[in-house]
Length: 351
Image 1: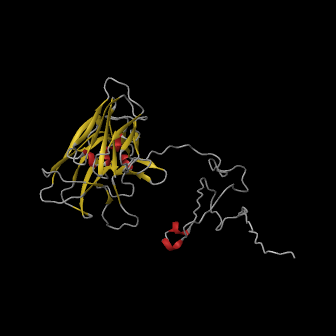
Image 2: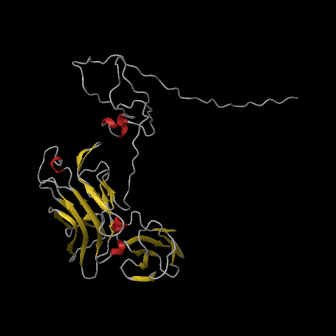
Image 3: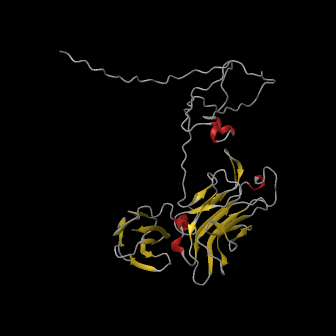
């Protein structure tokens, strides 16, 4: 007896490219054009029809875009999509930035890098200022509060100071600004404030903003930095006259609790790497990307108290050093690496 079994063979379907051709324009062109714009979208959601206007996962693939009936294609059309510019995007740890207006610069006050914000005419969004913040506004936000930020503990003195160094090259009568927003239970408190920067500074200038908390309660802090201010200009191109303004910022710290804020990452974008993180017994500190010889490794708790330190003066360092944290209580700590080119920081979590 021969037993027969029904076997289902899957049918593989291949998507065949579809040729789209439209030989005439409707309505007909009223005059001979000198410029052409070509655009494509993958979903009608992009037309402003709201979340229900499209479906997640829709994919539109386009190739071989060309005009018929002409002796040559428009310059720079690149309809076969073969020509690409190579670009490198740097993402600043712990910050939300407006790219390409914000990037790193080697023109630093200390360490390897500083933060550079430029008011520029961008391809995607027109004229806009450079902005960097430790907070963010949610999508579809109408008059809502800024979210995110870093945990903050008010010092026993009820006073604190934000210190930073900066260079500024304003265009026309432009004004940059740095603003600090303190939060309690998700709402801003009145103790926040900032400073406007309007004078040209060709070399780094140390600056401070003082805060007195009084009876206020605070649990979070948000730092906002902008390269321009529209100065009451309410036209559609409010930043157009300030294109070219450049603000460079470095060494942002609160004097009371440097250890608790991630804003020191300005100088640590390509600095030390710490792993594992979280950790139980010890952490490895990778110094491969650090410029200058290592002088000291120190460990701080969230109050800024030094837990341990190791000097490396007079001997060669390894590419990777280790720090013992086995006897520490669970919590967040800060590793500080002092080198010949400045100080670098990285937060760790002890489980």
